[in-house]
Image 1: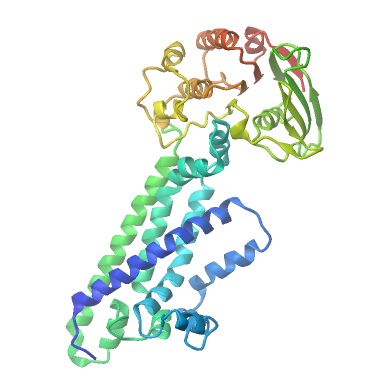
Image 2: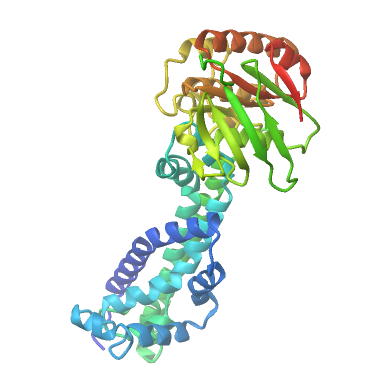
Length: 230
Length: 201
């Protein structure tokens, strides 16, 4: 193992979590809106597939991802042709953390959209707004704090991701996030202080994210509040 | 204006109750009354084009807005119906002025003064009383430059004097602009005040 650099580890964790959040954002908005507003054949199946990483052991999620995106997986040849590799790469770490973080994001976005009375959207339409304008000017702004809350949750979940990442991407300089570094350092009797430092960083980041989530959810409720007196 | 053709033709089948309602008013103001649950709000929503569960026919000044027999459908954003919903439904994330001027719209400042809401323009909807919200919702519908106003209990939170002033102003404004009205109200005095032809559902 290369000399241990706690700052680089924390920085890598933040980069991975941030990339996951950015990648998951459009997916969460689209899926959250579709699940909240549309009825279609196979809706339960779609919901289950998106949500299953939340309840599956992360190690199993990692195995499934390996089966899909690994060198011998379904999409392996395609990724190889594009020069993309999941094992021991940042791409693999981001992919694993995104899939694990996405359910929380989609759930929050869906709840945010469901909380909006569709009559606001109807009203926007009678005022001359096309569906796209209604979505941009009414639906999305009203759901925004809830979506941001989902982003914070997904960010925090990606930050702590371990099981799927270790299976899919392994433990190298390109994938050694806080949790993986802690796990690796547990084997070394001389690394007690580093383990504590990384744990403290992890607790601080997670708590910070939860506080942010709470504040955003409160804002969402306030935004939809129609009558302060009631 | 529309020659001898009626300005509004409704022949609709309401969902759930499966009631058929056919109305062709003569006067350019139509008041709908009837027990709650009979489908008055649904009828207004169908005219505005925001309830696709309703089947049948809606024609306004010879233009078919909906005809289920040949799948004719004019979307709500192309109808120009000023709809005031029972809950005022002011957009909660923007202030009163931005609610009223939602799509730019026609000049409306004078109307705001007439409705007594010109002092509320920079308030957020959650900081308005029920009556204030109703008047702002009415102003927003008028400011959108509608071809037809569709009002669902629009004065229910106004006290009697304010109600009469608002009705008088609305009647005059719609006379001048030539805007017909379809209104639902539990208070028949509102409908009489507007000189509406009353149809019981």
